Image (cartoon, rainbow, N blue to C red; front, top):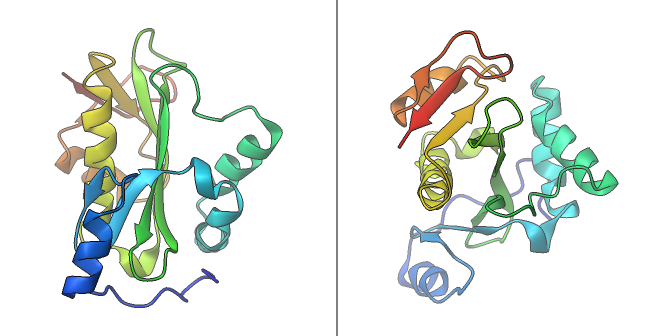
Length: 178
């Protein structure tokens, strides 16, 4: 079970590397995480993340699950994707992020519903997940946006990924031009 705090520390041996590198759904492989489509684990695979995020005052994972269940946000329009980061050893989902059409800027895509479990932060997982989304969008549009109001660490993180602050666009705090 992948409840809050139950995922073991990263496994970094040859077995973990071999398992990660032979997984076909993997977009990015590190020794101890796999990043791939969220569809096979939705919505139940996000239970641990949802509980943790909600207890931290972050609502975006709950919104993702609720909208997935009611069908209003499935990340299935052309160019959209929803990815998860998983611990290679346990298979637990330790991060999530989506790319969808931006409702506020015509022709742009938006990074949304981005969250990495607290105990897995500062290990490059958020950066790998964000990089997968950014690289994916490069084939689809010239502008990527995000709303970095979810937490105090969101804006500095997105800025470290090359996003620039913007003002005057409702619901958007940052953008990444191509």
